[in-house]
Length: 292
Image (tube, rainbow, N blue to C red; front, side, top):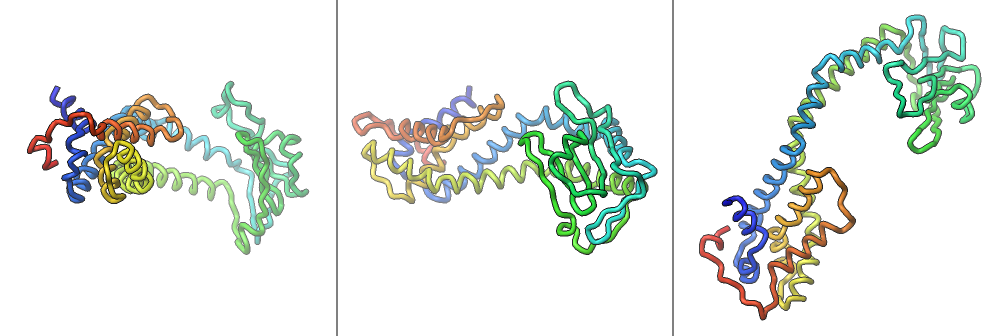
């Protein structure tokens, strides 16, 4: 009950806004705490999914997927790249099929993951002819983006320049093992740092938003016949954010996208609630509320 009363007092306190006795220091202190509450709530909402995700990373499934990626490179294959020109030690075209473990009945997958053909220039028709996602040619590489239904072909001589190197099964396996370790560590560290990253993102983001949001507060206040300067409107906006941020949290909780300008609409409603018509009696601010 006390929590509900506290929340209501943050959302609806017209006397506090009409009197305009709060200072910049109070506004920033309130805003910093509000963003902290927002981040904590976001973390709580995301916690079940995060725990499942971490469990997957630390489970045997991660190791199995790494093993599947490692096994993609055949023992007999050796790729040599010299100044952007690719050559192999096998008969071409050479195909690497998509692993059975990666196939699903829901997705329309091609037969092959990669086809190597350095005997001819790559064209978009080769993707259909070889039924593949990726093609590696002598001086170019291409892939098919199924989501956008488009083909991309890149010039390796430009991408790799004067680089010269050889890739065999041993080199590839070592690279995958190291990349897997670094990726796992990066993900775990990133998850630990995410609350701090979110705090900084929200803190700066809503301050920037209020550059325009203050104009909404200013116009609504003047509509209610209250004269505010832009600076006071901006400061007032900091105290009006609980209701819009509550809307933000509801969207996160239900996992839905908000309508365009809905956040600004909620800010407008919060301003209308806290700047009543001058003919409407406004209760006096309690002494302890003025110190917020």
